[in-house]
Length: 276
Image (cartoon, rainbow, N blue to C red):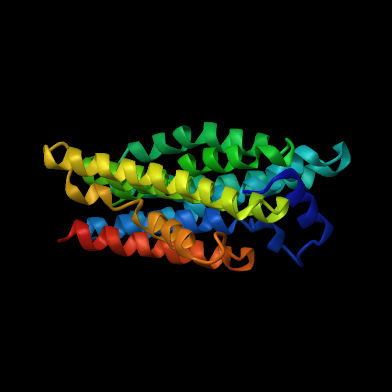
């Protein structure tokens, strides 16, 4: 998610035309795409309401750009941002309502309400210093992953354990991703000692391993299906590869690409084990 400094940088180098309306939130777009596609694959179906959910959610995410600019702009320049915000909200609502009517799933009307607190909180945190960035990303993750129950409902599927596992799994995967990446960014900016980086990476990898082991134990006693242990595997593999490498940190230039690879690895794993 954008921080105050990132937004200022974006405003200093504006994009042509209306491209500024599309957030350069690569992590957010990845979360939405991964959650959406994984849900379709785990459910093993697709529907018109589920397809209508794509523009509904996309315009809802795009709403943050005019809102942030509206809050920052001087009084005389707020009208245009308010107009863009109202237009995007209208389009998003139209697609969302149409999806709800076709799917006969009233829960689709509830999900935007559930997403409103983290959405609002994440935007407000963007006005605070950069040290709040991690909290902002954690809050935003819980809201963005609501695409999972939203897509599940649009497919006409009743809420069940599979939906819950995919949602919680996505949240955990991306929360650990935030933790690993913030550690690498801090290490790069502060020239942290390699030993300290290894300790931080080991703590994150160890906690993810313990959580996965707990899920496996619960599955043995029949409380969870074994495939609930899948979500953190890609993050753990990356962490242990870092620990085994000569340099215990990731080249920041390749960070975004690796996040995309991990996200789609998770999608493939979820799909394979859900239909095994």
